[in-house]
Amino acid sequence: MTGSNEALLEYHQRSKHRVNQYAPGPGGLDWANQPNAFREFRGATKFKLPLAADSLVTSYNDVRRGALLPPRKFDIDSVATLFELSLGLSAWKSYGANRWALRCNPSSGNLHPTEGYLLCPHLPGLSAGVYHYLSRDHLLEQRAAVADPQWVQAFSGGGILLGISSIYWREAWKYGMRAWRYCQHDCGHAIAAVSYAAAALGWQSRLMLSAADDIVADLLGLNRSADFASAEAEAPDTLLWVGDPDSRPDLARLLDASGNASWAGRANRLSQEHVQWPEIDTIHRATHKPAAPEQAVPEPRSLPLPAAPALDLSYAGIARQRRSAVDFDGTTRISAAALFAMLECLLPRRDAPPWNALPTPVRVHPALMVHRVEGLDAGLYVLLRDAAHLPGMKQSLRPEWLWQKTGPVHLPLYFLLPYDLRDVAKSICCHQNIGADSCFALGMLAHLDAALNEPWRYRHLFWECGMLGQALYLEAEAAGVRATGIGCFFDDEMHGLLGINGHSWQSLYHFTVGGAVDDTRLSTLPPYEFQP
Ligand SMILES: Cc1cc2nc3c(=O)[nH]c(=O)nc-3n(C[C@H](O)[C@H](O)[C@H](O)COP(=O)(O)O)c2cc1C
Image (cartoon, rainbow, N blue to C red):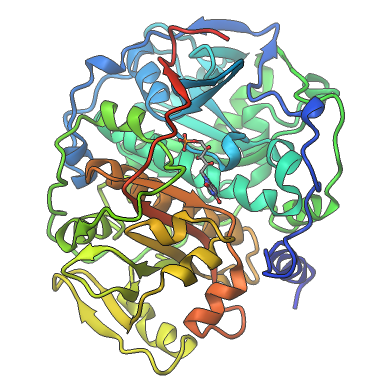
């Protein structure tokens, strides 16, 4: 076994929450050093973006079906809408003297480790260069102005690149060793949020997965140590191409062209003091990605369009009303048809978001604990997003399972066990009531073997989970219920329930969907009329 594989497996094991011991954390919250939720580059020229999302009338149902409108032209207005509906603020919340912002993309603990960047040629309203998105003020900070004509030529097929990076410290401050996992989930949520918003503007999106981390870091300016000085580092995650997938730019050419760019801005420091988590540094290094050719991805099988959701909402509306439920009522039931429609949106579709963005074979399958779905027995189910995994999955799970095909013919949903799993779901979700009070809870089974020998794929597994999560969040809103991502779960309790031995399949993320109970003590303020 290579050193990187060992490091990966060691981190994976050590960052598990266990019933008798949570993964190592800070043991309390150091409020004086709570990280600033907003990165800024002081000294960079700022371009205020228009708030234009309200004029976007694309329906959510068209977006999720991949029925894209003619692509909008790339200019400051359309790029502004892309950011507003993906990484932008969705509201401010207040309780007493405390105020905090929510965003279209969710984040574990609302700590938002994810930073967004734009790389573009000259566009109406924006000059060619590299920009950092500051969601608090809905503006772009120009990090680099690029004059080299090669830069513009590289984009000549039309399109832009959206860069994503993570500030691990933001999550580590609260969650310690397990925080790296949450940063990866959040990255997956952000990728999906961008992919959906792009689709609402008529654009396809595709991750540039062949890129080495070093190229991503160089293009985003993350390796410019003088600009970060005492500020927290940003780890390069990925670049997402927004535009025609056949016109993707050559990144080496872009890097060349950025050689003479003039850079501006110095990153703000987010906390005065930091706690070191060497295990996070180790897993970061072990999953460092070299350049690697993109994998050939089998064409997804053709599927009927997903059934329309209960509510006919605009994409802009649903992106901004998405919230995590803090509590479920324990009584709401959804219909089997509503559940099937949600699950249909988790199946890979080449031209529909968010799966059009992910050029990898399916590696994650949800295992559902169904509690309150009209017309469906309570119990354990698996949605096999790629039927090719059926024999392997059957072998890895408890031999007694029924594997009874359920639901529409094209939906690979299997019923494993009739049982009231409410208490089990609650205890697996670190005793959180939402596990039991939901309509259903699920764990995402990832094929960890796919990451061995190519350890950076461990990150991709979490991203796929985050993308599934974003799809579930939006689907829940459209069905008139609400979802919550669950990072706090007892890993091996879930494996024990399913009968998983070994580490070929591991549950990397959990989710709950149900009838939300709002916290009436909180007030809600609009995202951009109020400044703290
Ligand atoms: C990766 C991840 C893990 C999360 N884990 C939990 C959890 O264990 N329990 C919980 O109540 N909420 C959890 N959440 C929900 C976040 O707390 C929520 O996204 C955040 O407070 C922002 O609120 P919003 O989703 O309404 O924008 C999680 C969210 C994400 C993205």
